[in-house]
Length: 599
Image 1 (tube, helix red, strand yellow):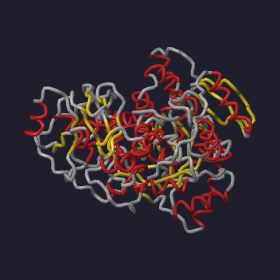
Image 2 (cartoon, helix red, strand yellow):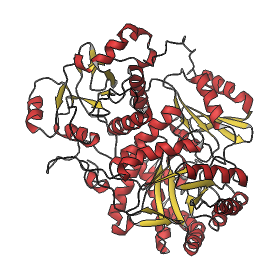
Image 3 (cartoon, helix red, strand yellow):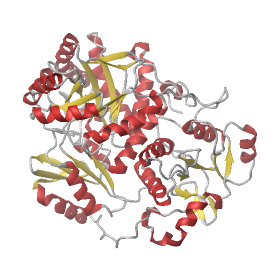
Image 4 (tube, helix red, strand yellow):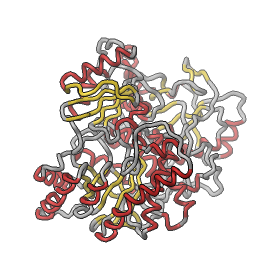
């Protein structure tokens, strides 16, 4: 295990309890403490367009959005927040407003006159981010911190005076040179970046702030939030600040919802998170029902599962991803375990419905019916049954029994802790299979992504089985998409696409769709689509290619973090992206379309 025990980030990994935090106020709204987990979103309208911003914010509030964020990239933009606020209040809407600040301290100072909360990003607020390779001596590092204190302290003072809250929001994609060179592009670097700013605020007696640790990779995001909570516990009881959860650049459609649910849902299940924003490359109003569905079970008050006392420690390090070391097993013509691909299973009933067309199902085919594999189903609390499996001479596939009244993530954690690592684990999205064809698919999708995705991001699982969706084609597509979003099995192009906001320099939704249409057949290629440079190069660190707004109507193309083509007219840019992919020998021609599988 790492230097932090699991109990430092989560009081009990087997029994749900929400993290205890201090309450802060965003306008009239309490966040943290005993308040429900709040839902928020961000305007896509240009901040200078008062009428559009007011109209969009009213629509969000009507949909149930509790906090509305607006970008303020310069002082001029920030000044118009006064008119947006006044327009909302005249309309009888008291939804709190948050100004999103990245590079400009003067914009933050202006915004703090008009809004209820200011979001600053420690990676680029008055900080150097030139991606230079430098070594900072202790003295140089301290001098940089003094310079930041000088820039940041006036904002703290103004927020304190005006009763304005703050979010100290680190992004994995925009860590400063100073942090990158001391800690690297790591969850620890993200945490230290935020703590540096928090210490400045605390030195001035200011405590009305929340933290966030956002990343486009759910594994990085989950580890960063856990590490932050563990560090806050170490710092002391009065460091119990609320947390804002979000996955950056999640994308659109099912993929965006799945990736958000993996990152956010996993942390909520451990009691972490006081306010949530689901970032989709769609109109902002569509984010609200997704966020509401994710927080609903926790706001309703979950009853912890009936687990005995004296449970074992986790079988994995929650701060460092490593896949569980099972042994290779071969059952019914299927190889699983060890370093083999995580398999997609289905039920015998669903298998029978699609067996006649498996060869035409393309990327969404089942690899076996679970009934074919001789799977051992156990109650993870039953030590006698687990001891019998551990006594077997050969490794076997094992899963949690259906119909148990246990929360799913803790049930599989306990099984992984008690079962010898050599045995393969088959994950399920639910222990209560659905035969209801009218069930809301989005709810099924979010539950599957939260449950299976969380376990995959902790290295648990050699095969997965979706039981919450009755239609075979839907359940198989969902299986593969969860594996893809968790980074567990890449079977198609992977997109990092940011949500639109007032900074965006082109139409993100239509552009993302065009890029998908041109490149969606490139298995294993990761493409970032960014509206502007705020989270650009850093979030694209994991991407092979990037498409980034450089100026109105102009696009810059990246290979990894490096910009290689500049100021390309927007109407040529998708074709030039394809040329760039070909130039780097990652292009293949699209295959012939396969028959649809929505059985």
